[in-house]
Image (cartoon, rainbow, N blue to C red; front, side, top):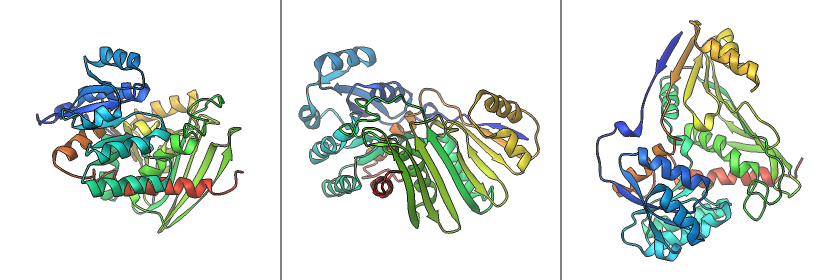
Length: 362
């Protein structure tokens, strides 16, 4: 067995100009952004805007001091702000991104980019027309472990791909007023969780030839859980998501000569496992997500098993620093999009979700 540790952090990069960011919104993901931007080499947080002055003041005190901008119009017009991170509810993304792009302000929009493919395409057209950078903040695509996956696939590490299996599911107690289950807030498991395996599949393998799936409704009418089938030439991607269970949350790429496993939770990927025989695969990546399965997996990864290679890509912080650094670099270079997450892919992922939800709930 080979056990390789690959420490790659944004802190190791050479000094470059720093982009001045503002964050719109002060919730949990805004806090994560503020924490992780400190780990980048080309970006800094300079300002915050919120619906309430009290929330903005508390956020500024916690992560600053930051300048407090009263509203989105003030933010859009501020010449000292180079780019804006939208950390607001899903249903607010489209209108807010429109306002900022119209003003010529680059935006990084927390996933999902919008709540429909039509909205995403509209934002892409506006960004192109105004010659302004825009990107969906789907941080998983930028993690060092995903770079390792790209490298392994390019090197034919597991032969021709034969199947993809991925699950992302976290049990949520039903609350019709929460952002997870509220239609008014753009809830549903596909927009909250399913977007990750869909976007990662698109990033690694491009556009599918066919799309199919099914979904189950929550009492509010949003999707409680869903299964997605993406057909490619020679293989199928079987993806699933849900609020109805805790899943194993791995992303598994099966090939003719072995399997490539992005270990759980794959949305925060820090470990990639390559198995080249059935025994190594069963021990290192056992079925299930319980304590026993985790213990077996942990022990197996430390044994000298033939046919098993483990790549460790741990990182400080929460992991948003890599997408922040990538977006900042693209903006500083005058690019309109970041190549790993073009707006066309964001619109395509939303189109896949719409195709699934267009079917009657099962």
